[in-house]
Image 1 (tube, rainbow, N blue to C red):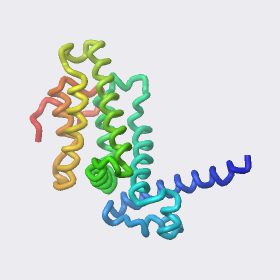
Image 2 (cartoon, rainbow, N blue to C red; image 1 turned 90 degrees about the vertical axis):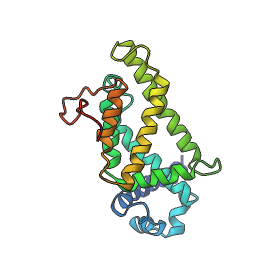
Image 3 (cartoon, helix red, strand yellow; image 1 turned 180 degrees about the vertical axis):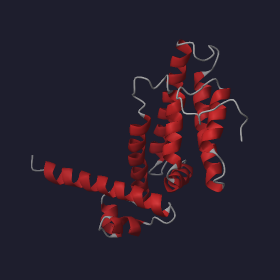
Image 4 (spheres, one colour; image 1 turned 30 degrees about the vertical axis):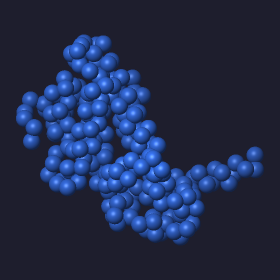
Length: 210
């Protein structure tokens, strides 16, 4: 019982650090958010900050995991209407991500570095890619079962293409903010037979891609 107090305090401190880190990165951008700045935001030295995570790479990996937990609350993949609202949920995730370019920079930076199996974020990204592909694949299969998309559509291919396009559009947007990630994704999804259920007039699919 006595061990629970320090453990709970340590977990609460890590959550505080991660919340503060996301705020700093959103404000300063990934390149402007040093370990020292992150430590200052929660009243810790650089060594004190890394004490909770072990290394800089582990710290930034947990920042991404924490951000994913927040994103899941917005996208809500466990929602009973997730399959029917697949496009709307994908667009909600895009809106959430593009609202913080700094976090998108961190994601792209680490996803490239983490292709090395020894990288602290390797398993995180491997599991993330797999989980999102499965979520989209299963939703597409559900739409097929409901007769909402063609029976000969390939759910595995659609899931892979959607995620690949999301990553690619995000990279282009980082270089050129004029690239409309949302609009291009709507165009792609429509060509794959996936259309939004929302009444939002911005979710149009009958025009050419920008």
